[in-house]
Image (cartoon, rainbow, N blue to C red):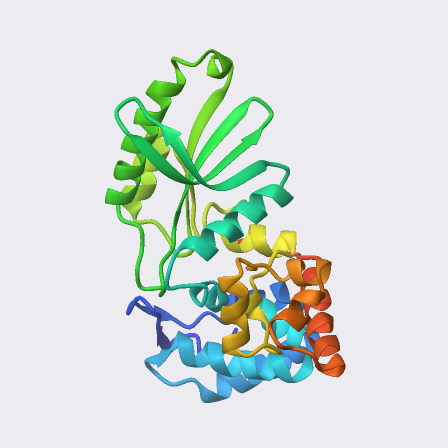
Length: 289
């Protein structure tokens, strides 16, 4: 056990919690960092800890150390921050969720207008698998301190009920099961989670549910956003997002995109593609909490 087990750290939410070396170790393992490098990083981090240090400072130091040995591992470790960088609008996050569902075997479409019993609704992602129809709302937040309180599932469920009432009148929907989902890149309040479970809504947060959290699903699918990449500039990443190219795998499937955004140097292109291949081909062994 670390000698720093009694040191408190400050999370992005402002909460004060005891430093957990095992949690940091798990995040490094999940990012593909080697055992030797993990031990070196933990030794370094333990040496810089002090009472009230922010988790942001710990993350920045660990990230810089990982990046020295493997940019692909560093990109994977950066996943949470990279999703925040998809903003400020929530549309790139909707694209990411849609692509994730497609890789998981769903037919998915982003930004669909659906007629309800009372009014029309724009649903972020509409997905189907078998005889089940999923209406998915994506709640994107630009920082970790913001969460989905109970007002979010209350509002989403009212829309879902309105749509469901209309679908009941359509013959093609008689034998189809409909379910509402809410996906967020942060987390849900206790009341929001309780309400969602009670009403039959599927709530997917950054680290919940335990066996299907957003971070777990993205890493297992190898579907990381372009904002993870350290070999692209901020401007280049934004240009890709403006073109609705949100996931790294899209660059592997169409290398000409790099030329289109002004990355013409062959050696630099190779560095970028090498980082993407290492990121997308990684086999995740997520250690659940």
